[in-house]
Structures are given as C-alpha cells and as structure tokens.
Image (cartoon, rainbow, N blue to C red):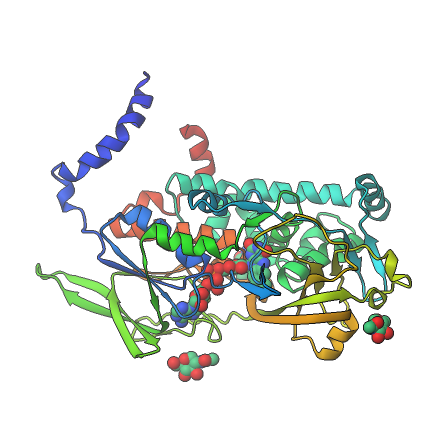
Amino acid sequence: MPPRRLLLVLLPFLTVLCPLVPGRGEQRAAPGKIAVIGGGIGGTAAAYFLRQKFGRSVRIEVLERGEVGGRLATVEVEGESYEAGGSVLHPLNLHMKHFAKELGLPALPVPSNLMGIYNGEEFVFEESSWYIINVLKLLWHYGFSPLRMNMWVEDILDKFMRIYRYQTHDYTFSTYERLFHALGGNDFIQMFNQTIDEAMQKASFSQKFINEMVCPAMRVDYGQGVNINGFVGAVSLAGAGSGLWSVKGGNKLVCTGLIYASKADVIAGTVVSIEPKTRKRSTGDPVNLYHVTYDTPSGQTGDIYDIVVIAAPLNRKIANITFKNFSPPVPEFSNPYQQTVATFVHGRLNASFFGYRDPSAFHLGAIFTTENPKLFINSVGIVSPVENRGSEEKPPLQSAVWKIFSREVLTKEQLNLLFSSYDSVKVKKWLAYPHYSPPNEFPPIILHDNIYYLNGIEWAASAMEMSSIAAKNAALLAYHRWYGNTDKIDQEDLYEKLKTEL
Ligand SMILES: Cc1cc2nc3c(=O)[nH]c(=O)nc-3n(C[C@H](O)[C@H](O)[C@H](O)COP(=O)(O)OP(=O)(O)OC[C@H]3O[C@@H](n4cnc5c(N)ncnc54)[C@H](O)[C@@H]3O)c2cc1C
Ligand SMILES: *[C@@H]1O[C@H](CO)[C@@H](O)[C@H](O)[C@H]1NC(C)=O
Ligand SMILES: *[C@@H]1O[C@H](CO)[C@@H](O)[C@H](O)[C@H]1NC(C)=O
Ligand SMILES: *[C@@H]1O[C@H](CO)[C@@H](O)[C@H](O)[C@H]1NC(C)=O
C-alpha cells in the first residue's frame, strides 16, 4: 500500500486518538451553545453542518418565528399540496441532492409543460410537442443564440461548481466577494456589477433574444426583468435546463429532516435583539458571549450563546433584529426585497385573453411574459402536487391547478379575465428575494467576533442551493475561527492548489 493510502486509512483512528495526545489539551474548549436564527433551508443546513464540525457536545438551538421551512412552503388546493415558494432544483445542486439522499427523501422530476412567450399582444414564441420543430423555430427566430447561451451558462456553472471541491476540503471564505473571486476571478465579480442585459450584450447576444427569451425567464424566477445582475441571471437561465427536480412531499421536508439529523432544538420565537456580554472565566480570562432576546407567545425571554448564526434576511420588514451596544456598531444594510405573489387557481384558463380566436387550439401549459407595463402577471403555468408529480399531463383546457406569479395581489376582475371559469383561489404573498439593481455590494458574513450572517449570499443569487452553500461556508468559518485554523480561511489560488494536491 502506498504511504499516502495508508495515511488515509489511518486518519479516522488518528482523529479519534487525538484528544488523548498530550498537547492538544491546550486547544480551546468547544463552544457550549450556538443559536441559529431562522429555520429555513439556510438555518437548518447551518445546524446540520455546525453539528458535523463541532461534534456532539455543543447545544444547537434554531430560533424560528414561523414554520420550519421558511420560504419553502406548500399551499393546499382541493386537497392536494403545491409548492408555493422555492420549488425547482437543478440536477447539479449538490448540497440539496445530498440532503435529500441522506434524509431518504425521494426526488421527483419536474414535469415540463408546453411553453409560450406572450408579449401582451401575441405569442412571440410557442413550443411544439415536436422536438425538431422547436429546434427549427428557435433557429429561425434567434439563430445560434440559444445554443451559444447554453455554452455561456455552462461555462459559468463549471466555475461555480468549484465551490463543492473547496468545501469538501474544508476551505471557507470570510466575505462573499472572496468566495466568488475564488470561483471565477474578476469575471465573476464583474457579473455582480452589471445587469444580465449588459453582460449578454457584451457577449454579443441580440437584443431580440435577450428580450424574448432571457427576460421571461428572469420574470418567472425573480419577478424582475433583465436589470438583475448577470450572475443571478445566469442562475436563472441554468434553471431553464433539463433534469430539474423537487422533493416528493415538498421541499420543506429537507428542512425538518435537517433539524432532526442535526439534533438541534427548535425554539418558537421572534428574535428582536442581540447584545454582546463579557464574562470572566474561572481562570480570569474574559469570554465573549451574546445575549439573544426573543418574543414568544408567553412573553419576552432570552438566552446566552457562544456563537450566533443569522439565517434570515436582515431587513426591517423581514428579520427586524437590533444589535444593541456593539462598538463599533453593526452597520445596517439597506437591502430591499421584491414582493412576489403566488396565486393558485383551480379552473380553466381563458385562451381568448391570450389572443386565441379558437380556444380549442390552445395547448400551452406554461405562459411566460416579456416586459410590458400593461401585463399584470409575470407568468402562469400548470402545477402538479408535491406528492405525485408528472403522472399524466392534463390537457390545459380542462380544469387544472394554475400557479400565477405577479407583483401585486390579483383583483377579482383580473382573475375573471385570466380564467373563463374557476372554483378556488389561494394566495401566498412573499417578500421573495432581493430587488436586484447592480452594482450590488455584499453584506458582510462576519458581523462580530462570533456572529455570522448567511443571507448576504442572496445578493449574488437567491436559491435553495445558494443558502445551503452559505450555510456550509458559515459553519466552516465559525469552526475555523473558533479554533484558529487560519490556513483554511480565504486561501488564494485554491483552484490551482487543489488541482496539484490530488
Ligand atoms: C415564490 C418563490 C419562488 C422561488 N423559487 C425558487 C426555485 O424554484 N428554486 C430555488 O432554488 N429557489 C427558489 N426561491 C428562493 C428560495 O426559496 C430561497 O432562496 C430560500 O428558500 C431561502 O432560504 P433561507 O433559509 O435563506 O431563508 P428563509 O427561507 O426566508 O428562512 C428564514 C427563516 O427565518 C425566520 N425568521 C425571520 N426573522 C426571524 C426572527 N426575527 N426571529 C426568528 N425567526 C425569524 C423566517 O420565519 C424564516 O423561516 C423562490 C423563492 C420564492 C419566494
Ligand atoms: C464592482 O462594484 C463595486 C461597488 O460599486 C466596486 O467596489 C468594485 O471595485 C467593482 N468591481 C469590479 C470588478 O468592477
Ligand atoms: C423594528 O423593530 C423596532 C424595535 O424593536 C421597531 O421600533 C420598529 O417599528 C420595527 N420595524 C418594523 C418595520 O417592524
Ligand atoms: C376572456 O378574455 C377576453 C379577451 O380579453 C375577454 O373579453 C373575456 O371577458 C374574458 N373572459 C371570459 C369568461 O371569456
């Protein structure tokens, strides 16, 4: 056996023996208690990775004011549940894939419906059920742009995938600028400073293609047009690929599963403030701790923690948390979030509203839209329940459950225009994701010695996988900073280093 292999085999034993080796006794004691604020995918994944790193002895508490799952939630329509928030995962979302597998949650393919792009007057593109016709139509309308776009997105995705390698090797970053720079260098950073429109124009895509093919995808995924940053735009375009999936029973099951797997305690409460406290150890050394105050149905209470991980957007309208008596003060970030309304309607779509003279010829199951101030919806599409996906695709003219995304709550008049008949309506209003207007600066990850903030990553792109990546980064950062492993933090040229390492 080559020595290297031998070392790998022995490694687990060595780690077990280490606490017995003298000298390690000088190592700092493990933290006693960690608070994670927010029980969405970011917070629950953080609890999971924190447990992995810090081991069994630390207490982990997840403070959640609503339901575990956060922006992963389902609504019930006519006895079946549908994804109302984060719904679709990419086949290369490796953390989410790993969670589902580890937790024994089956993945279901997301059925694809025939798609049309409506500009407020007519359809500028309609998909056919014949693959070859689609290819020809795309070629006719946009030349090789669709093909080039796939290559453009793939190149970004390739670089993005480096994060998994870094994280597997325990490397972490103290700012999101550094993290993204380590993935794609200045080209990546540049993408946060320009719109997807600018980025694609520079890559010489035609304005027609950008307006008719790219913009509609941004409108479905982020409720905004091509003024969002280039990176989130590319993420959105990657989501137009094949192999998309979601978790059977609802994506939120990943969050409850991660809580269980991490053996964290969930505490029902709304965190209102965090305050630093210094205590003297028996040895006389000062210890820095945090007092977290939260509201519960039975009144205000609080507790003391060694480490605090904030996994909810710090925004007065979302996680309204006051940092008391910090010096220097924790800066406040002005970071608006975009309102998106998801409306579920069981009914028949009004094909004449979309310009069809002969409604029986209407065969689309998903309608995307271009930018047009007259339009009061971003998209409308048939959805299937979280329990049984992709069984039979209903012909759209029969009654089906449609999900509509819009900026504002739809009025009765608007619903009456969109549907020729309907019998039930469910509305879910979200402060959904950042309102992107590049150049965007990232909020810091480290807010204080042992306070970490995850959701700044949403300013690169808001997605389940992004929160999971931020969660692992923060858990590693908290761990390495606690034990002083500076060699694992903010390493430059990691890509080259890891290439030669194995
Ligand atoms: C309509 C919609 C569609 C989407 N579609 C997709 C998609 O298809 N694919 C995809 O990958 N992503 C999608 N996303 C984005 C994705 O859902 C989010 O990026 C992700 O769920 C964010 O997770 P999080 O844990 O970071 O935040 P959240 O899920 O928001 O979790 C934060 C949690 O903190 C809690 N909280 C807030 N303040 C406090 C407080 N003061 N005290 C205690 N608890 C507090 C909240 O109740 C919440 O549970 C979509 C989002 C929306 C809204
Ligand atoms: C991007 O914009 C930020 C803030 O405006 C600026 O500090 C940074 O230098 C810019 N980066 C690049 C690569 O252009
Ligand atoms: C945020 O909290 C502060 C202090 O608790 C309160 O005064 C303020 O009204 C809250 N803001 C919002 C938008 O709820
Ligand atoms: C359908 O759309 C057409 C065209 O906008 C509109 O005139 C009609 O009132 C709508 N409703 C029904 C039930 O057909």
